[in-house]
Length: 173
Image 1 (cartoon, rainbow, N blue to C red):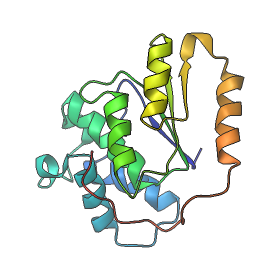
Image 2: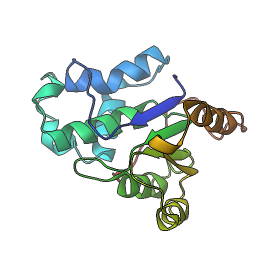
Image 3: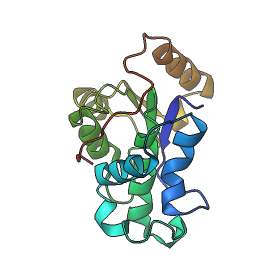
């Protein structure tokens, strides 16, 4: 679970401050760098820094739905996961747009993304998802949990593509 980032249809911030939402995962994964810098970079990358830089100690629940979504994307980026499970439908930026931004960012471009969504998987959607760099497109109603686990394990079994040290994140999300 520590190697997997998840971005769901409904934002799921932790009942913590904005700062703690970003720093928590990095802390439990042993991040040794400058936490303030990591939090700022992650929030900038998710296009949220300017809106929250003066409210980092406030509860994440005080953010709007769209801001909470970007907070969850920033939280995922901060842990530099080995894979991201992403929903296609999200309040502001859909999964396709978020994946395009991740793939355009040198710090996140190599993180595999699997779409796990309730949206039907018409051939056009699968083709579009793969064209932007997604590993797979799984429809929740048609995919057994064991198939999701198998796909994740298959990707996690690949050679590690990055250092476990956190890298500087640029402004693409």
